Length: 333
Ligand SMILES: [Zn+2]
Image (cartoon, rainbow, N blue to C red; front, side):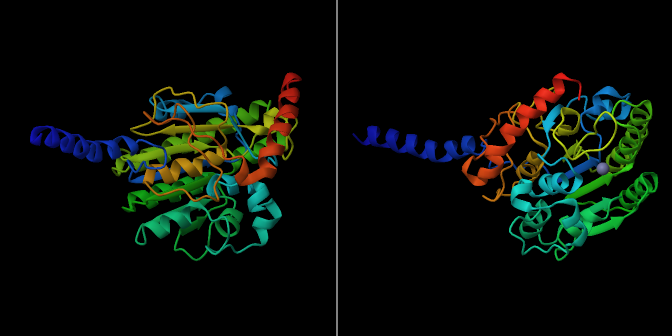
C-alpha cells in the first residue's frame, strides 16, 4: 500500500515537473533569443526573389523565407510598417501615411508597437530605430519610451550610420531599420523595370554590410534576424491598391530555432513579425494583436490561428480583398 502510494506520488511529481517543460513549447512562450533585428526594405514586395541577391541568400541559407506573405489591404508604407510594428491591422491602428506624418505617438496608444512591450518588460534595454522615412520614428514608434532614433534620408549613409553604431559597441535588444531607395525606384519605373531590380541588388549590398556589422560585434548568434517589405509596386510604379504585385511581400527569418528552408503557411502576413519578435524575446503577446506565429517557422512550434473576433473588419475584408488580388495576379498585375 505504501509502495503504491509512493509510485502515485512520484508520477504526480514527475507530471508537475515535466509537463510545463512541454507546455513551454507553445508559441506563447519562446524567449530563446537575446535580440531581434528587423530590416525593412520599403517597396521591395516579393521581388527580392527575382533579383540577384548574394547577401540575402547567404544570410538566410539556413533560415525560412516566404515571398508570398500578405501586406495590409491598403498597400502603403504607414499601414504596413504600422502593422509590422504593432501586430494590428490598419483597421485597428488607423496608421495611414498622412496620420504618421502628423502624429507624435506615445505609449498611451491603444495599439502600441513592439518597442513599447519590450520597454515594459526590459526597462534598461537598448532599443533603436534607424530609418530613411522619418514618419516611422515619430508617427509610428512611440516617443516616450527611450528608443534611440536616427533619421538619415539616404540609404548608403544610413547603412554607414548603422555600421558605426554597432562598431561603437551598442548591443540593442530590438533594432529596426527602414531602407527607402527601392521604393523610390519602384515609383519611377515600376516593378518590371531593370532599374528596380538593380536597386534591390544595391540594397542587398547594404543588407550584407548591416549583417556583417552585427555579426563581427558578436550579436548575430543569439539573434532573430528578419528582413521584410511593406508592399511591392504595380507594373508601371506606385502602390496602395490590391494587385498581387503590390500585396505580396517578403518575410525572411534567420535564427537558431528557425526551421531551415521552412515554408511559412499561406496565412502568413508581414504583420506576424510583431508576434515573432515578442515570441523570440519571451514577452507575452497582448490580446490587441492579431499577429500570429506561422507554421513551419520555429522548430517544434505549431502555427497559430488568427483570431477572427479580435478584428472583425480585417477578418471579413482581407479574404474578400484577396480574391481580387488573386484575379489581378492572373493578368500579371
Ligand atoms: Zn512608396
